[in-house]
Image 1 (cartoon, rainbow, N blue to C red):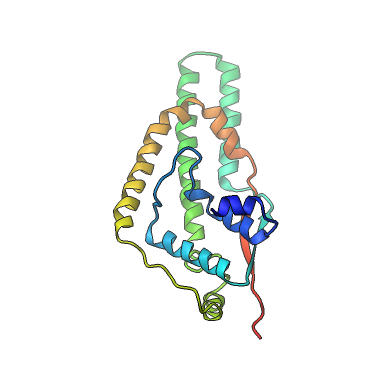
Image 2: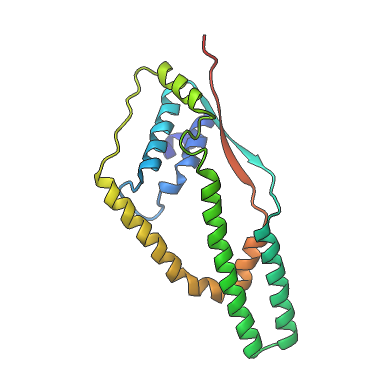
Amino acid sequence: MIFDIARNSQDQSLAAIRDALWWCYSDTEDHKICAEKQNWDFLNRLRLVLASDAEAEWYRTGPRWNIYRTLSALLLAGLGLVAWQARFGRVLAFSWLLAGFTALVLLWVRRHNDLKVAQPSFPVFPFPSINSLLATRRQVTRFTRKRYPQSLLRRAKLHHYLDQAMWVLRGPLLIAFAPLLLFFLVLPIRQQEMRLNLPTSK
């Protein structure tokens, strides 16, 4: 298993691919793979990286101030001011619910936009371009791309519906802890980007 191999290896490419696969791994249960077509293709590209001489590394970029952090900071400050002025009562309860619901919407929109921004580069990720992907594919003659099993399509759709249901179930709990959610949204997040060092063709 690549997680065990990467743990005992100094190869940075294995560590980078292990981190890229973290989203489909569970600490609590063994489960079958659940992936849509684009995610299946991504797994095939990771297999191609492992079969090639390319080296993968994660690069961290500095945190950026954005509209989500600004609105969350204003809401957190406003909620703190209301709590200090009103102490307890209907005003604080209404402000808490309003801030919690707004924070929940901000969290959902930020997650949706992050996925949308990543979409243009996802068809070839982690390769920097389609040309580099095709060049690597030509060099690794022993590589065989695995076709997408149609049986996964139904499983992927079910996973999508369960994910939406979890948002509904988590909503009241997140609203109840509105200050913590807002504080989380204010925190700077360092982005990570996988980059490939491709061998020069002879």
